[in-house]
View 1: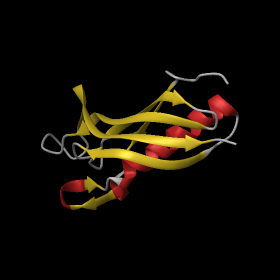
View 2: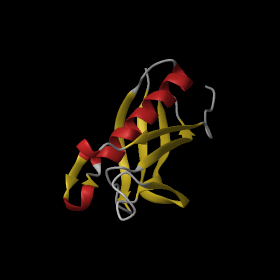
View 3: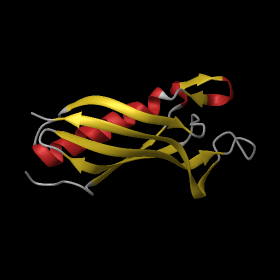
View 4: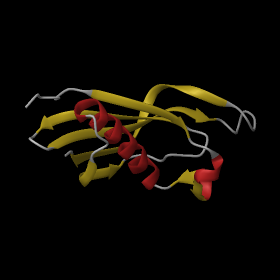
Length: 126
């Protein structure tokens, strides 16, 4: 068995306004989990040549808001390689944020990304 510990995959995405679910242009936490699933799929493809299956999440923490108009980055790093399972540490950060006080289409790159969501996940591969 080859260890894949340390393998990191990152996806970046603009959060469209159609995903705003709550007042203040807030986006639900499932958006981050969906991105984590996409990152995990790429990790499984890279490590095992198969999309794999998500088995579980542990310790999901919603630390800050995700808003429509944000640019977010989801990163997953393999922390444990089992025979058929992989443990992955996830983080979703906000790297750009809209600035409606300046103008309707204004946005800014954040000096320091905001950690919005973290989780640990387990995937299994055939």
